[in-house]
Image (cartoon, rainbow, N blue to C red; front, top):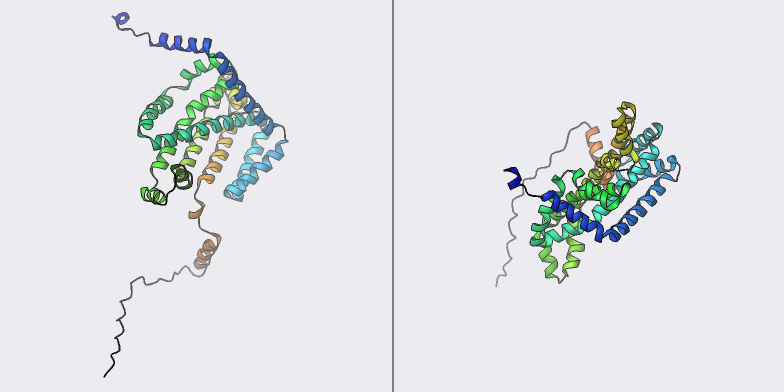
Length: 319
């Protein structure tokens, strides 16, 4: 009975993958070379300088993003990574996250714009995103291994597929959430659709788009263990090794390093997406502090509207 109803779906997928491997192997070799080039250069940029130089640069970026507290916390976290002898692995993992995240963002934002502009495209893209988010990463890691061979590139590909869905969804949501009256005003002034998108819709949708960028980076970082299983190395490689050897110490050191990188990247990307116009200025905070220091009593202002003053009587000339 089971043999009669058996659908050879797995055999079909295997045949498709075999056909792609035989006929498009050169294309995937080029893609592998490009991804590997970007990864190696990013890893070199992060690993070649002394660790204290990278700590200073990250602390400076953190200071401009969120202030001195975040800068001090980032510096302490990076120094902790160096002190547990995980600096090189952390930089390799950071290079993988940055490369995979940048590629995923470069793909997801245009797809989100397309989905926001076209209902048909949205209806096609959404089921694909659902499939990408719900399918276990190990399932599409198998064809990635066949197409790109063991190494860091299958980990990058799996990370891109796994992480790009929130970027598409939140970009579409942000653009669809732009006030239609603002868009109609731009159309009334004769602006082209490209100019409306570039100067009206994208700036107004920036908080939602940056939230998608934040989620893409976080999901990319969550894939480091799976990338380590296919030979990507980095912190994921140490976590996999600690699982194989039941090495609690190594697993704790690599896990804490992943957490520190996640916190730094999360807070920094969240700060980039925050609307600075809504943040209270220093003068406003100082005025509030002075008001609180003066006894805590606030002067209440009567907001009741004044009655309309009687209109002046028009002077009449007596004849």
